[in-house]
Every structure is written in structure tokens, then in C-alpha cells.
Image (cartoon, rainbow, N blue to C red; front, side):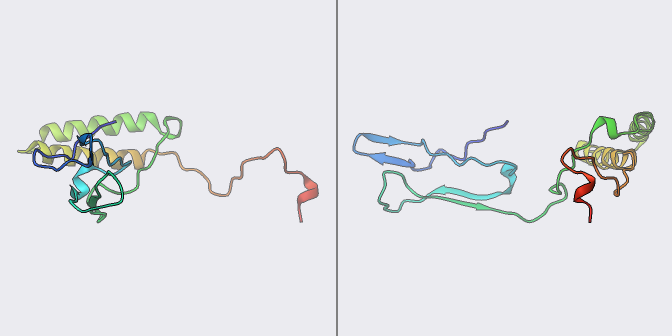
Length: 140
């Protein structure tokens, strides 16, 4: 897990009282990359609390890599085909004329995603899992 501080050197304290002030307040997120935060600041407005208001603005527009994650299981993978295709991808990337690390990473990401999709065993959608509580008296 990664933690990032949104406080800058000129940020006003988020908590003030007669005994002192502190930068104790946090904004905790899950599955939101800090690149999506447009703004995070402490507002200097009076509240009925010792804590100041925190303004957080998040950009939820889709970027290239914000698609829904898919969890792949090893037992559902055609492992020999996956290994063959991965070796081919690595050979192709090592021979390619790629000048920047970012381009190389993007091409590897696209390639590995495609290899994972291609090498998943096909599941029949009509198969029902047997459940213990079902019996023939429940059929219509």
C-alpha cells in the first residue's frame, strides 16, 4: 500500500485549537491513483469544529489504463501457450526500435494483457454449479 502526502510547505493546519495546531487530518482513498486528484487543500473558513474543511477534487474521466481490473486464475490459463506467447513478446520487444522506456512499458502492458486474454480457457456459460440445497422437488 502506498501513502502520499497532500500537504505542501505552505498548507495551513487542518486542525486548530487553543492548545495548538496540527496537520493531522487525512484523506484516505482506495483504488484512486493520486494522479487523478486535481486539487486537495485546506480551506480557511470558520466551522463549528476545531477541524478546517478539506476540499478534494478528483478527476474520474477514464484514461488508457483505468479499465476495470480482471482477475485471472492460474488454473484457468493454458500455461504452455501463455509461456510460448510471452517468450515471443519478449523477443519482439527486444528487437523493436523503441526509444523511450515509457513506450516499451506501454507495448509490454498491451502485449501481456492480450496474451492473458487469449490464453484463458473457455468456460461454458450454461454450466451450473451444483448446490447442496437443490433437489428434484424444487423443479417446476
